[in-house]
Every structure is written in structure tokens, then in C-alpha cells.
Image (cartoon, rainbow, N blue to C red; front, side, top):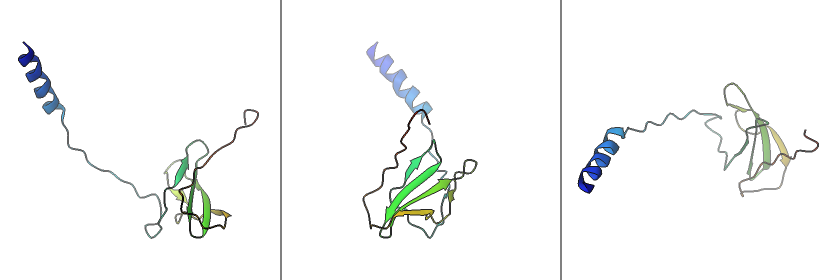
Length: 95
């Protein structure tokens, strides 16, 4: 009986196996290199850091594209950083 159950499980797993197809979409300028960007899905922002400092920008709600395409929306700190930023939204009084 255990053999039959095992055989059914093996056959079932093999029947459900599917080929995974990657469908990546480019969201930035292909000449840009954004190290470890952090995404704020609620406010539609992104944040990342490089040797120039810490950058923040908008994300197009309809397409998901970074605005601007090179990822350098607004330089919020000119201190060089390579530590993968963490974008945080502070909520006060329900806002």
C-alpha cells in the first residue's frame, strides 16, 4: 500500500512539473547600475546608493518604470555609500 501511495505521489509531481520561463522587464536605463535598490510600493518610490551618495526617485504606477530612467532622481545625501539603502516611510497621525 505504501508503495502505491509513493508511486502516485511521484507520478503526480512529475505531471505538475513545468518549465520556468523568465520574463524580466527592464525598469531603468540599461547603462545604469543600481546597487541593491529598495522599493516603497505604497508611495511608489525607490532608493539606492553609490559612490555619489544616496538617491531617491519615483516609480511610474502604470508601467513600473523608474523616473528618471538612470535612477538618479534626487540626491538626498552626497556621502558615498555602498551599503544597500533601506527606504522607510514614517507614518504620523494616520498620514
